[in-house]
Length: 196
Image (cartoon, helix red, strand yellow):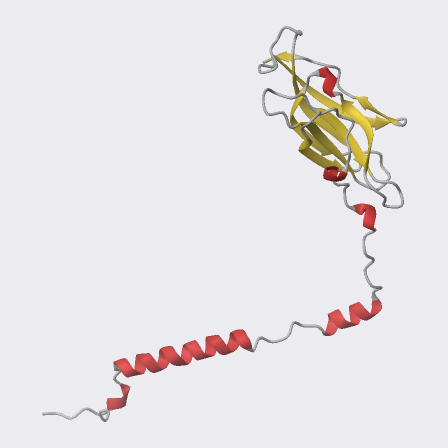
């Protein structure tokens, strides 16, 4: 029988206790690394912060007006006016956002007609108010889509081809755009009514 050239190293054979010790050590390193995270590299940032002026806070009137706080020119009788849709953006180029709101009476039955209104806030950040009516509820229209992009209000309106069409079943669809021009909202799109 020949003896191995290397002596028997019994401590090099792995046993379950070795795996438990290794797992415990790795878990400890991971836990410590999450607690003892190095600080972010702040040397350059500190110098930049000292040189740069403090950021200005946005003016209070830079948030769009909330249409829920507005009294709309809508006769609803015993029920309340409900803001169905809203979209915001700077419509007149003054740097302050306006809100366009689709509002109707909260009728328990039928399809109440919508009014589409532009809501703004005064320069001093006062209470929001209605400044324009884009769609009058008397026109018997319902707005299914509303958006404001690049100073343009876009809406998809459902309507009726005649007074004989029941309120439940609008049969005409219009895609309409309005833009602020010369102190008023002007429809950029001629009415291209489509039958539903």
